[in-house]
Image (cartoon, rainbow, N blue to C red; front, side, top):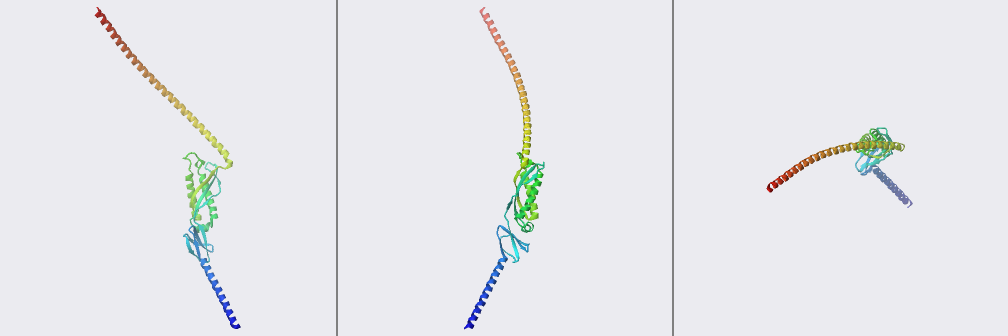
Length: 277
C-alpha cells in the first residue's frame, strides 16, 4: 500500500514537472513570437536595427516581422513645427536687426534621419543651425526696407523667405533626411539698444522728405499760379479786344442808323414845305 502511494506521488510529481515544463515552453514560445512581431501605426515610420545598425525601413502601416535579436525604432511621420529663439543679424547697410523664424518639417528618410540625428531634439538642433545660417545670409543681402517698408515695391519678405526655404530644404534633406515644408518669419524687430537711435534717424529722414515734398509743392503751386495769371491776362486781353471790336462795330452801326434817320427826317421836312407852297 505504501509502495503504491509512493509511486502515485512520484507520478503526480512527474506530471507537475511536465506541465510546468510545457507551460514554460509555451510561454517562451509566446515571448519568442511576440519578440518577432511589431506594429507600425498610420502616423509612424520604423527602422529595424541590428545591434544598433539600421537594416530595414518600414514606411507602410501594419504588422511587421523581425528577428528576436533585432530592435525597432519608430518615428512620427507627421509635420513638426520648430520655433528657435530669435537671433541678431545685420542687413546689407549694416543695420542690426533681431529676427526669428519657424520651420515646418517632417522626416523624409528615416534611415538617414536615424543615422545622423537619431531623434527629434537632435533634428531641431541641426535645423536651428541651418535656419540661422540661411536667414542670416538672406538678411545680409537685403536692405532693411525689404523687410519693413510702406512701399509695396520695396517690400520683399515673401521672395526672401522662399529663398531661405529652398536653401534649408536642400541642406536638411541632403544631410539629415529631413524635408523642410516651409519657413516662416515669426518676428523681425530692432535691438532694444538701437531703437531710439534708429527711430531718431527715421524721424530725421521723414522730416527731410517732408521738407522736400513741401518745397516741391510750393514750387509747383507758384508755377501753377503764374500759369493761371498768364492765362487770365491773355483771356482778359482777348476779351478787351473783342469788346472794343464789338463796341466799334456798334458805334458804326449806330452812326449809320442815326444818319439814315436824320436823312429820312430831313427829306420829310422838305417835302412838306413844298406842298405848303
